[in-house]
Length: 280
Image 1 (cartoon, rainbow, N blue to C red):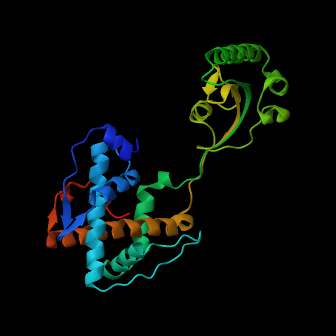
Image 2: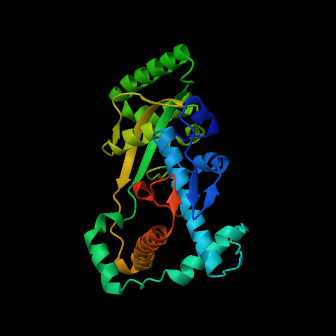
C-alpha cells in the first residue's frame, strides 16, 4: 500500500481541503497535511480523509480532557521514549473514562478452541542452496546465472550426491563452506521467492527449476521439514487474554468517541465515514 505525503497530494491536484472545526476550534490544514504520512491508504484522498478523522478525534479527546481538568503526566517506555503532553492527557482520559472487564479464563478458552490454528509453533525447514550471484538490473549477467543454475540442476539430477561439492566450488553464499547448508529457518527469514520454493518442496529433493531472487539465482535442496506443533492453552492464555482485553477496549473507545462526537459541533467532515481505528 502506498504512503502519501504532501508532495503526493500536490501532484494529485486535489481540491482544497474543507475547513474543519470541532466545537469552534479549527483543525489547521497544514496539520492535516503533516498527519497524512501516518495513514497509509490506496489513494491520496483516502489518506487525507483518514488524517482528518484522526485529528478531529484527537481534538475531541483533548477538549474532553480540558473539561475534566486532566493535566499532563507523561510516561517513558522501556526504550526511553517519552509521551507528549497531549498523548499523556488522552491516555489518562481513556484510562479514567473507558473501563472494561478483564476476559475470563472461559472466554480465553473458547477463543483458543475456535482459533487453534493460530496457536502453533512455526514449521521449520532445513534447506541447502547453491547461489549464482547476479543483479536483476544486469539482464545479461542474470540470464547467465539462470543458465548456470539450470546446468547445475541437470548435473545434480544425475548425481545428487555431488551437491555439497558443487556448493563449495560454485556458491557465492557464505554457506558454501558448509556444503550450502543454511541450518534451520522459519517463515519470514528468507526472501519471499526462496521461501515459496522451499515450502513447496518435499524433503530429500532438489528443486527442478532455478529459483530467482534479488541476490541472484539459487539451486535449492530441502533436507528436512519439521511441522509446527500445537501450543498448549496454558502457554498462550495470557497472550489471548491481552488480545481479547485490547479488542474490547478498542470497541469501548470507539463507543466513547461516538458519544463525544454526538455531543459536539463538528464541521467539514463526516466522522461516521471513518472505517479504520481513529485513536493512534
